[in-house]
Image (cartoon, rainbow, N blue to C red; front, side):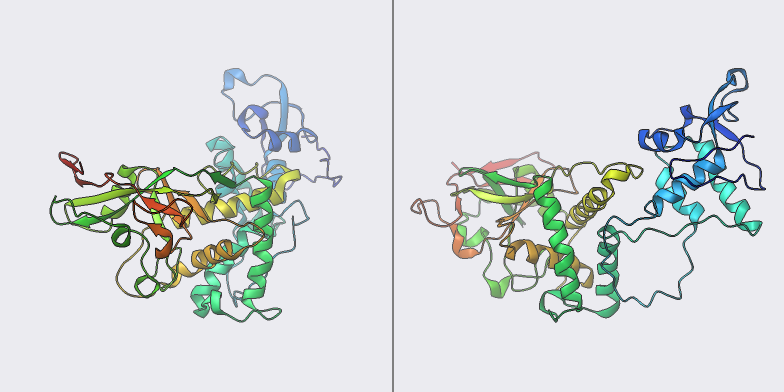
Length: 396
């Protein structure tokens, strides 16, 4: 078959292994399509039904494999300088390029084409002619993974760690500066006005209305603040939900008692929130122009996913909470972003949750004077639900 040069200017050599051709009907990403058009030639597709294999613009399976691996390597140019973490990972087995392609291309290639690409890579490896592949050192995505590994391996307590140049905390400050940039660039800070309802509750053994006051159901004092996925022990946060049903699902997921008592607070002043509810879809892996933006959005989506994972209330410290605790502390303290909390999705029902940087003194009783505090308990909002929703007791 005829060979062609790609738009990177490098001559393409047909390998000794079998290399079939495919038409562009089997590629479902417009950026990957564009990358390959310069290497196309007229031929017959080996992957279309036999009765539909007329002359068409096709590209070699090998060219497709090399193009995908080049994209995974960052097109030879990382989007940003990586934040390096000392893991001692030098003993690890080098990455498997066929597996990397499978993970990256499952949504964008037909199944039989993807298998042909993997077989092509494996056969070259077996023939002693390995494909060129060096995973791109992603400045944001890999730094998130690296942070989690480092915290676990070295038992770090990052919020209280050494801030000196070159330290783990110093590396995190550099990373978070980049994240703040993508938060601003994607307009992920939203404003909510006074009067927004936020529900919060406790599980109970009976359906009697508890007669909650703000002091009972608001943020707890520091000495009673347990470790959570977003807050360290002794750091109070106000966790709540936009809907009573979401609050019930959240609190019942970790407590076997049959009844849930919930009540609503209302915001008493405008609040600025980091909004992780509708993070934009990351650009295509094959969109060269937006590689850095893709990494940052993947980072934020992974962070939001981790925020929604279950929390274990067993009185012990959980090392895997520390990365999300650190990021939450950063957002709390960031003068650049100036946010009052985080808005994120519930993993249980897809509803909206809030984690507000509000302590017990900012949770007011219903008769509190306007202009004080941040949240005010709404009189008459209290209700008790059983978990099968067959009975609801409401305040009158």
